[in-house]
Length: 162
Image (cartoon, rainbow, N blue to C red):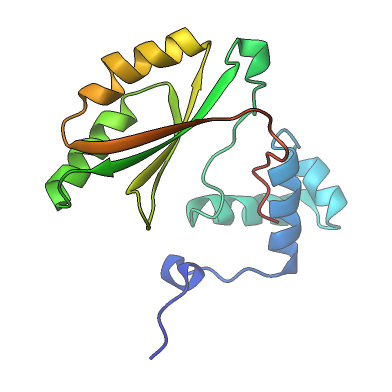
């Protein structure tokens, strides 16, 4: 038997109208139900019901604003690769729980290859990143090795899946 897709696990099947809704809210989460309904040629009630179904199933996880890091004085972005000393469930959970507390870490991925985790970190300056690294990240128990790479320029940055 083939493994279930995430859609099947959630008990939801998506049709073209659902994808149209998702494309619209992905690009502008401030659209009203009425505006969405007009754009996909549905009346507001069925459009609203579809949106609620997509939210309930977890297809739409949340609505958010994308902020300009530079305008908020977050001028340094760092990709930090981390390897744990020990590869156990507890060591991984301890690392994850620590990272979840750091506001500087805006993304964290458990990865394969030479490293165990990839962190995307934003900071005001090289000095503030150094302080974060020395006083917070390097204090997390279980880190065996880390490597920081500083982002010089962002070529493409999007959250659009569709």
